[in-house]
Amino acid sequence: MIKSWDYKLEYEQEKEEIHAAIEEVLTSGCLILGAQVKKFESDYALYCDVKYCVGVDNGTNAVFLALKALDIGAGDEVITVSNTAVPTVSAIVSAGARPVFVDINESDFLMDTTKIENVITSKTKCILPVHLFGQCVNMDEVNRIAQKHKLKVLEDCAQSHGAIYQKRKAGSMSDIAATSFYPTKVLGAFGDAGMVMTNNENLYNKLMRLRFYGMEKTYYAVEHGYNSRLDEIQAAILLKRLNHLEAYLAKRNQLAENYNKYFKDTSLKIPEKAKQGRHSYYLYVVRHPQRDFILEELKKKDVFLNISYPWPIHIMEGYKHLNYKEGDLPVTEKIAKELFSLPLYPSMTEEMQQYICEIINEILTKHSL
Image (tube, rainbow, N blue to C red; front, side, top):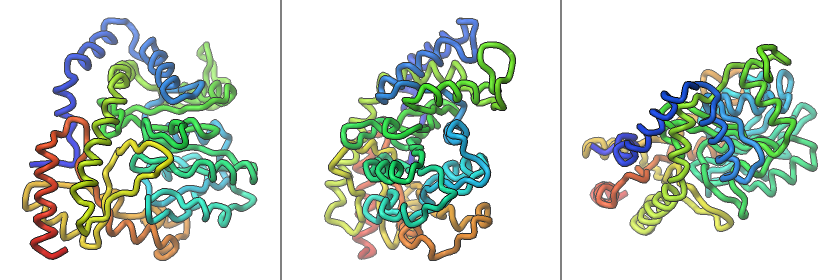
C-alpha cells in the first residue's frame, strides 16, 4: 500500500538523532521553555532571515497569537483566502475578527492580489496571505497594497518552510509571520509545534508574554495571555531536523521535477512554478476534471492520495455565519473539485514514484482521460 505520506520511513532514517535529542532533554532537568527552545528559536530566525522567533505549541495558535500581538480582535476584518487549511480561518475567528475572502489564481492556487483592494473597508486591519502548497504569494503586491491602506501583513507559512520569493525567505516579508511544524510539514516535528516570526522588537516582546499567560520574568500577568508554549522535546527534535532542511528541499524539488517530466504530456494539469523564487513542494498538487474517478481507481491499486482541499472554507457549515454562498469565489470552488496531491516526501524512493506514475498513466490511458 502507498499512502500520501508516512512518517515511519523518515523516522527510521533519523532514529538515532531523534532518540539522542529526546535523551538530551530528559536528562537536562528542564522540560518546558529551556535551552532547546531558545536554541531552536535562534537558529530558525537565522534560517528565515528574521530577527526574532517565538516558539509556540502549534501552527493554529501561531496565527492566533500573531493576530493578538497586532491587536486584532472584535470588529476587525482580516483579508485571506478560502482555499487553505481550516486553521487559518479558525485562528482569525478565535481572535474575534472576521475573515474576508478573496479568490485565488487558477494558475498557482494562491491569493489573487488583484482582488484585495475590492474588499478593503474601514474595518480592514490585516492582509493574511497563505503561502500554499510550498510557494509564496506575490508579496510585493501584498505589501504595496498594505502600505497604501495602512494595513498589517501576516504571512501564513505553515506550508512553505524554505520557500523563497524574490531572494527573500517565507516569513521574512511582513510585519509578522506564523508557521506550523505539524508532522507532515516540510520541517515536521513528532507532535504539534509552531513558530511566530517578526523583525519588530515590540511584537516579539508581546508574543513572549502572550504565549505564557501574559507574564514576563515573574509569576505575574502583565496582560491577559495564553498557555501556548513550545515544549523542549519537540524543539530538540526540530533542531536536529533543521540541519536536514535544505536536503529535504532538494529531494522534494527533484521528485517534483520527475513528476513534471512524466506527466507533462498527459491530461493531468501539473503545478505552475513561479520563476521568481523557490518552491518547497510541501505538496505536489495536480488537477483533473475526473479527479474523483481517478482516486477511486487508484484505491483499487492500494494507492491512497489526498485532496487539498475538497471543501472551500467559505461554504463550510462551521462558517455559515460569514454569509458567503456558492458562486462567491468561482475559481476557488472550481479548483476544489479538481485538485489532488501526489505522494512527495524526502524518504520516498524513485522506485515508489515510478510505480505511482505508471499506475496513474495506466488509468489515464485505459479510460481515455
